[in-house]
Length: 92
Image (cartoon, rainbow, N blue to C red; front, side, top):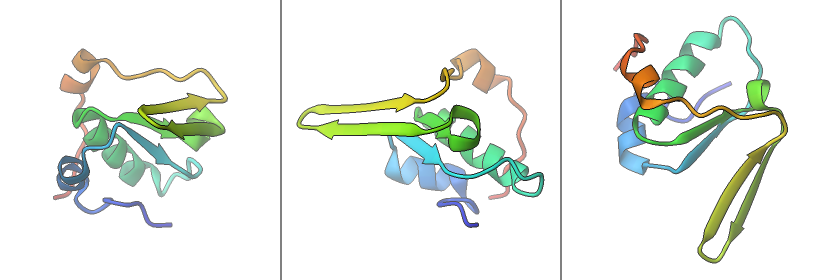
C-alpha cells in the first residue's frame, strides 16, 4: 500500500493544503509509523484527518459552496496544543 505524500508528508501537505484527508486502510503494525507521520503532517497543515481503521466508514458530501465529512464512529479532532507537543519522527 502506498500513501500519497508518504515520503515527504509535510511538503505535500503544504503544497495541497486540504481541508480534510482520508486515510484508507488498517492498522497493520508495519504501516503505523508511515500512517502516523502522514496524519501528523496534515494535521499541522490544518487538515481534518479521517482514518478508516479508526473512524470507520467516511461519508463525504460535496455541494456548491459546501463540503462536509462524517464518520461512522465518533471522530475526535486533534487540538493545537496536542499537536505542538507531539514528537513524531518524519523522514524528509
